[in-house]
Amino acid sequence: MRYHRTTGLMLSQMQELTCRVNGALAEPWNKGTGRPRSCGLYGAVEIACMYLRQNSPQEFLGDMRGVSQPTVSRIVTKLVPIVKAVLEEFVPDARDAIEMVKGRVCLVDGTITPCWSYAGHDELWSRKKSTTGFSAQLVSLLDGNPVYISEPLDGSVHDATAYAETGVKKIVESSGGGIADKGYQGTGLVTPRKKPRGGELSKKDKECNAEVSALRAPIERVISHFKSWRIFHTDYRRPYSTYRDAYDAGRGLFFFSLTWGFE
Image (cartoon, rainbow, N blue to C red; front, side, top):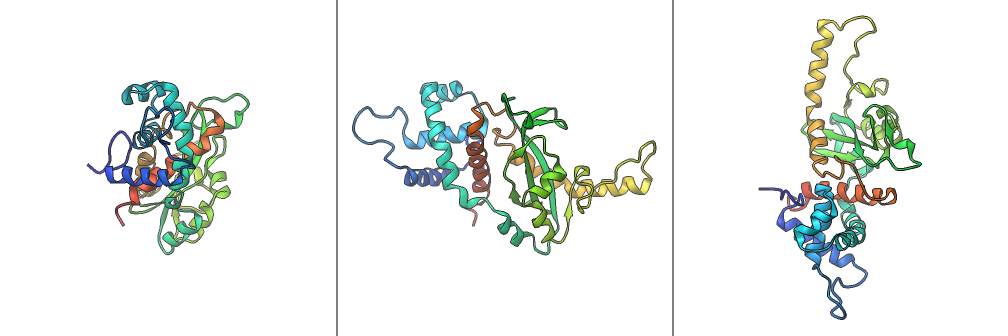
């Protein structure tokens, strides 16, 4: 099996990630003096990955690993930003994506990563999805190879606006063309045709829409795989200020799982 259900990583990838985290720590995980930690570094990295992969309650993760909920909380708080930092090199930026899409058709779509309704953050409300969260833009090739995942935007940002505000527009402009859904009409991307007000689509328009939808299937699978890190699929429950680190760490794990060990 390529992926472990609990962490999303193979054993060799978990070992590599633990080595990277160990090298990034400001001081040894176990100092050798004083009270020893209740969880070794490998187990702690596993807990951090399990949290991002499963978005499980901390009490549940603690029961699984025989530690307390406060211990899990401290592990997540300490290690998630480090996981983000050590996996940053695996996350393609807009320049990397531009190189990958040159002369090739790409697919574009957006998704909402839900979170709690934080007081004072009405901008997170997505009217389209009827929930609070952050908006992410994804780009893939026709073969389903993901080439770019944007920084998180407020959930209230429409897909067409997010397309222009992130690096996605420049990526598509450097490609052989882009295909997207109806939310991107007016951006220059190939999109399905909307039913005219008070009318119906012609048979030819329906056939065209079916063809566009079939071509878009790979980006839908990319989103599904991305959100198998359930930190992006179910409500994010930790403080608002911690979301960006968790998002970046989860995005790093997504690309790391696809690339490291398969060069």
